[in-house]
Length: 91
Image (cartoon, rainbow, N blue to C red; front, top):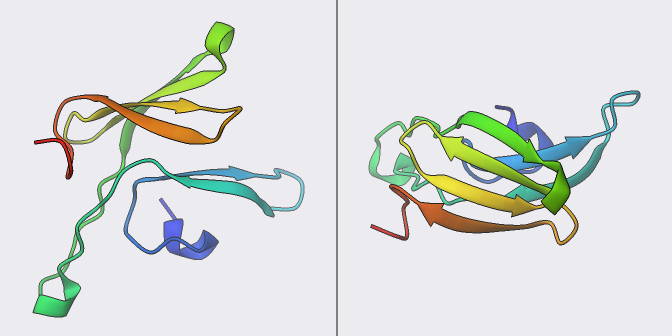
């Protein structure tokens, strides 16, 4: 929920790995796009994760955002794939 704090450019949509002892960002991945309308004078609410589930046998995290978009994050490759539901790109 603090994507800007770690170098993000949009409100939400990022998965950040942080060292719990130091608070240092280890890596950051944009899971999905959040369309920002600030230039038009409209405040952009964030789009945040509703749930995250670790799939240990596949080294993946399944993420569902608050509007129902589902994504798989490959923790080894640090990549995200849209699976289903609403998405700013896949409508």
